[in-house]
Length: 321
Image 1 (cartoon, rainbow, N blue to C red):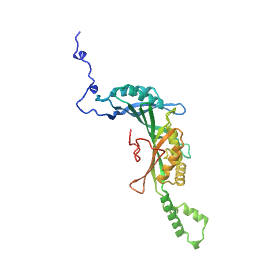
Image 2: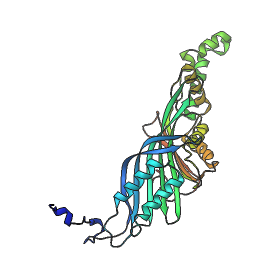
Image 3: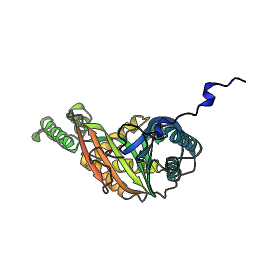
Image 4: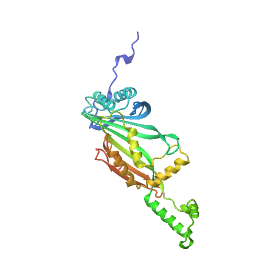
């Protein structure tokens, strides 16, 4: 039998060989944008498979190693995420496997999973229902025996400016004075008709689509990822989440909700902060309210935190690993 050249050779592991270049420690080495399905389990026990993009990393602290074994990270996460639902326990176990496979190279591991989470939302008045997609990022870090788990997501809502509303009411008052002079006497039917006309709405306050971004550090003892409960807390606090399928009665109810919840970005951030601070599953949080204004070409921003999470740069919230 003919012997090939390859059969006499062992496959070289160049990453483990010494190099003439500087081998200074590296904070993180790994892969991003790995396409993989993940299993998500809800509070009622239902499991849902959803496509995700994953980042897998370890640090590189061995003084004589040129690189890590990326294939070991890939194979470990591919097997784990396809067989086990995403949870605090499964993420911690997977990070432990990352470190075991790099025992002589690394002391810290990180997993970051990004996906869109679909929630069916009911209309405000009618029986219509529709789906909302919420971006979610789950980040786990294991350093020795210290494990941290963070959940980041975003809720979109409508914000109506209190200052603009006050100015609009002032203009409506002025128009009313013009159309109904003091000496003319008031006829109820005429006033009702005026209120229903364009002259009765001579000015309207400006509103804008707004975003509440949150990054929450979770209790490690949680049994499932509290995605829905965190989003519900935020939307219940803000009162004006964007809608899906609507009829005219739903649109009218949405207008009423906006009028009853006039908000500067500072108001929105405080509402969200109060709601998140009472969640026993959240150890710490950072939240940012961004109002993409219709009056200005720039955004209005307010940020609230429960404490100081390591790695936050304060403004963006994504300053560290």
